[in-house]
Amino acid sequence: MPVLQTGNLDVELGVDFHLLPYRRKADAVIDNMNNPAVLGEMYADMDNDGRHDFGHLNRWAWKNMAWCFYRLNPGCLVPGHVDHFANYMKYYNMADRGRIVRSLVFLEDWKSGHYFEAGGQAFTKWRAMDFVTWSHDTYHLGGNLGTEIRYTVQLTGIIA
Image 1: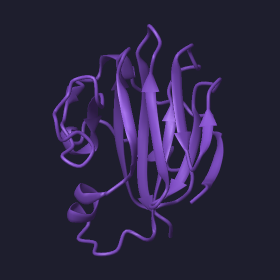
Image 2: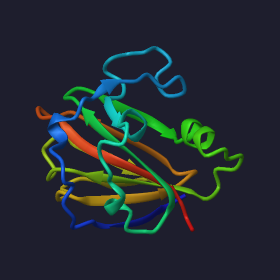
Image 3: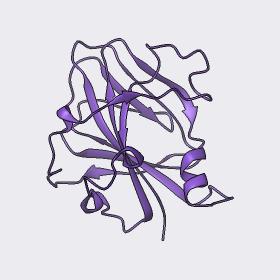
Image 4: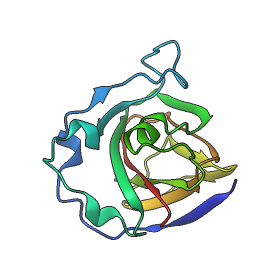
């Protein structure tokens, strides 16, 4: 499936994402070896206990918007995959992922070695708050071959 939309959110986060309490969470589908060079560290709405409200990032009026900040250290990668949305579907008691969409929002300007690809389209040279939105069945991957941390936030929701 191709990328659905790209653009720039042009909003303030209201929090210093560098200071969030990121932690490693293994993904049995993507990272079955629990390799520290695969995947990054996350801080998600389920870890939040209501401290932060990022509803202002939902520019698409999606239902059940969830968010997950992501810190990808130098030398780490996110292998190519299609999102399984298992936790999201369980939380919202869903059986069909067909209307689920996801956006990746880049929190800082692009740095050398940072890479993202979705639907066969490569993305580099982004600006802070640029986003890429894709559908539930889009193959995508990313990596950090640079020397600086790559920060993003994933937004997940249901097209209303």
